[in-house]
Every structure is written in structure tokens, then in C-alpha cells.
Image (cartoon, rainbow, N blue to C red; front, side):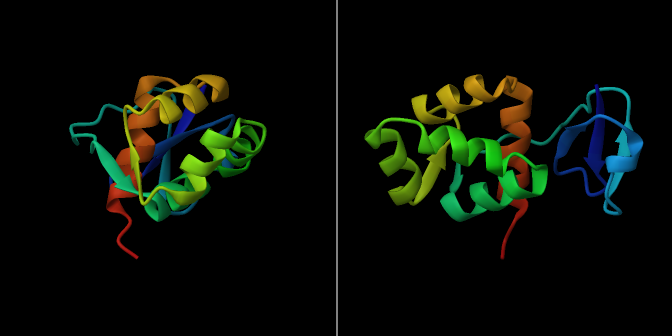
Length: 114
């Protein structure tokens, strides 16, 4: 696995090859280290935009759509998304994402201001 790391250091995503790296990213063969602290929560709109930027939004939305009504309500109606909520942990597990992956989406989300 290789990684596309944002040049501003505020996130990264997994890629298969260097050709998938966008102009605001750099390519790396190793998992990036981060000294940024992961926020405990972010606004739902920030989380959604971060998922989109990381290329995870479609898979995330498919899993939520297939989930129970409580999970769908959580995604559609919560003003914030909590890093260690059972909702986040469950969906991340189903997506095959690591704790570091989840941290990276929250760090990226917190950096999105508009």
C-alpha cells in the first residue's frame, strides 16, 4: 500500500499507485506520521467533506444506507460526529479502516473551515 499525503500535513489517504496522487498531495510508500492531535468531534458537514476528499464517501454512504434505522438517523440528523462513537467505530470496521485511518479523516475534517 502507498499513500497520498496532503502537502499541508493535515491528512492522507491510501492509493494503489503514484498516478492517483492529486496536485495538493505528495506520494509516499510509508504510512505518514502525524503530530497533529485528533479532535474528539467534528461538524457533520466537515466529516462528510473529508470523506469525499479521501475518496471514502461512496463506500461510507453505502454502508450507512444498508444499516439499521438508528444508524441512518445518526448520520442524517447529528450535528456532530464523535471520533469514538459506536457509529464511527462500526462503520470504520466495516470499511476495513484502521484507527490511524479514522484519525486522519477527523484531522482532515477539522481543517475544513468552509
